[in-house]
Length: 364
Length: 73
Image (cartoon, rainbow over all chains, first blue to last red):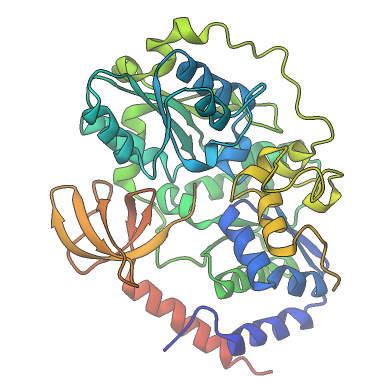
């Protein structure tokens, strides 16, 4: 039986990469890719082969700025029932997290899916239930489909959804870091298809491969990118054809378009990114927590927030530095006592690095 | 947020599919975003199927890997 972890095949691809005498820097933008790289030890293998791989802004919780978490906390403090993915619980708003708010008596509940949040609203008709909707194109269609198929009167959305491609565009346009190629995220691409990447190719002439999440997927992605780089022939290649089609998931995109409209929004670590936020369209304004509960949210002061002292999450999210370059990593900042969002989320660069290395850079 | 796992559909009732993730884990999954049938493998993300896995493409990928093995060293 074929396995996507086949060591014989992995070694074969590694041999081919070794022959190329590489000295390249790639970026991926997905927590699951980072997890595969570190867990399988491939990151060390790549380093020896002259391939440096940075993690970009691919963790939705990490890129959600403090003011949006603060909005959720504020709604909970005003007596609303807040439903969130578990990962969002420990990220700090301006001074505390949703866990802290719950400890102070707020009604904050972890859900696995937006469906669970709807169920809570159905079972509690006397309460107003808000779902903090976080995620890129992978989760936004679920929110859209839920609203289209009808939700209880007492159910609302606080949308922190974001379009992923504009962030890459911004990152490349900032030009702070030399990147020779991009490993594009498999599951965002399942929805978007390939067109956003062709737009990036046209604008920046950068090699790109859409990759799955098994070690062999990543090896093949790096192999394909290396061939493109050596041949000076940038392309968009799809290694993950078993899940990603050229046009993506058309139904999911149709639902997203029906429910959301793009607007300019801040990402943590980035300036305002044009047309990268997903806001509920007017047709769904009675479900938009920002509109319905505007009175509660008007005091969220976004002007006086400062990132935790010493935390380098902002630069980590732009791929400029690695977790190990942060003075807090592994001592003041650990998964048990996280300082910045990259350590909070299981998809964050710091959290993944710490889990598999205990905070110590492996010597290769 | 982008973690997604494959499962196999056992039953479909409206938008909800009873899905087997192996090792005895069976969960209900919302299939409103895909056109799926019983027996299909789906990629599931936060309770929703986001795509039906394409078996032919998976076989092609595996063949490509096997061809790579034949690269003359």
